[in-house]
Image (cartoon, rainbow, N blue to C red):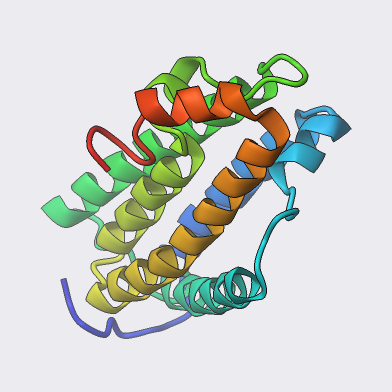
Length: 186
C-alpha cells in the first residue's frame, strides 16, 4: 500500500473494477421497475445541508474514481487478493440488497433479506466494494477519500431514514428499533 500510487494509463488499472461495478450496478438498476427506481432515488425530506453534504460526497467520490481508474492494480500481492475478494463480496451483496429492496411490498419498507441485518445494506455493500477497490489498487489516498465521502453520505442516510418514517410511519419506526443502521451495533 502506498499513500499516493503512481497514476498511469494502463490495461491493469482500477478502471477495470470501476467498469465491472458500473456494468453490474447499471444492469441491475435498469432491470428494476420504474417505481422501485423512484423509491431508490427519493430525495424528499432532505434538508439543504444534507443536499450539500451529498454533493460534497459525490465530488469526493469522483476524485476517488479518478485515482482508482489510473492506479495500477497490485496483481500478485496479497493486498490485491484481499481487495478483490472484498470487491466481489460487496458487489454481490449490493445486487442482493437491490433485489431485496425491489421485492418489498408496495407501501411497506424493505425488511427482508439483507435488510434484516442492516437498514442500509446497499450502503454497507458499497463501502465493502470501494474499500476492496482501494485495497486492490494499494492506495491509502483512495481509502482516505472514500472514508471522507462515506462520512458525507452518512447524512444522506439520515435523510433517507427521515423520508422512510414519513412514508411508512409506525412500520418503519418499529423497524428502526429492531435493525441497526449499518451492521450489528451501528
